[in-house]
Picture 1: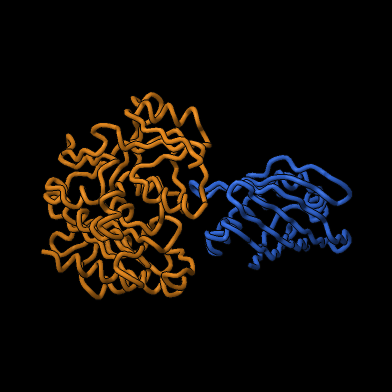
Picture 2: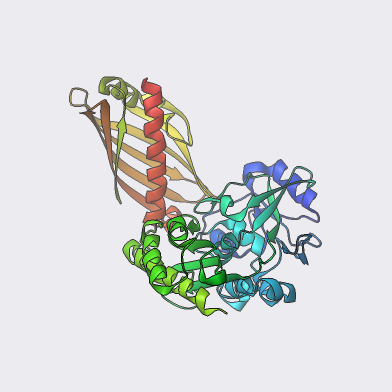
Length: 287
Length: 147
């Protein structure tokens, strides 16, 4: 191995290592993305800062406002099987259960998934739909700021975070009364693949009206893409299937997909429409 | 891989052309370029840092102007670069054409890029998107430099 591996014991130690090695350091949480990039020969860092030895970094707690505080190092499997998560946001548990295979889910972490910013990953799309926030630490570890998850993603594999910042935890707001959420993932090749398109949605459909709605799509742009035109077309009107179908067509113009092994850009636009409509319809079917 | 980019610049073409053909000055307009220096008549060397998330490419290479027609505002360049750390090469032939346009000029850059080694793992769509970003920023910077 050409790199020096550092097992930080605390957040402040990890942050100090990042300050010291600046551009020559890569942070690893569960190491799944790192291993792929390293074996492909696409990264050759001099230093690897591992977060796995930081105590309590994987805790899943209730926060003071009735929401969830999920430690950045919590694995997808831990989130999927957490009683606390299942009680408040079972749809998040379901979403992270769709990631790759059990071996990947046992290793890959929620914080790592957000920090890696792969636009086809599952957790970022659902967390954005649920209006989750990342708690970001810097300096000696005492400086914390909160960033809405959807504002973290700026481009493929690229975040708005500084190289000397780390995601400490993810906060998911308390479940509003009457909230409905859904995550739908379409894989073209095998169920453990990255999404050709995925849709995360959160809605309040009380009284048969779309009172609130957030829709995010994965795999069809450089970041999770917010389907604002779909939201605008539906909010304030009745929650019915015909309107959902019309509004879902607007998703085609909200996305910016590329041609790759998971489909042509045109195909992905069409699938964005199809799966947005399916996600919206399934919100109504949830009682 | 063939790439074509067009940018409209609200500055008189003769001013933009002067900047474009001053390679060390024009290169400063490409985000990630470290000092480009002349190595002979119509020949230069320099390096370009391209970052896609955790992946950092440091392309060291040479640029040669292979043809130049100042009257027609048309030039061709050849660039050969490699990243020795990751093991990859980029070879490009670039055609630059500047045309009059209402209120300024239109810059057209057509490139034929061959990517070898590991860099190719990224695939054309990701590379194309990055090239689009770089060119967009290049054109904006040229407009500022020429005014």
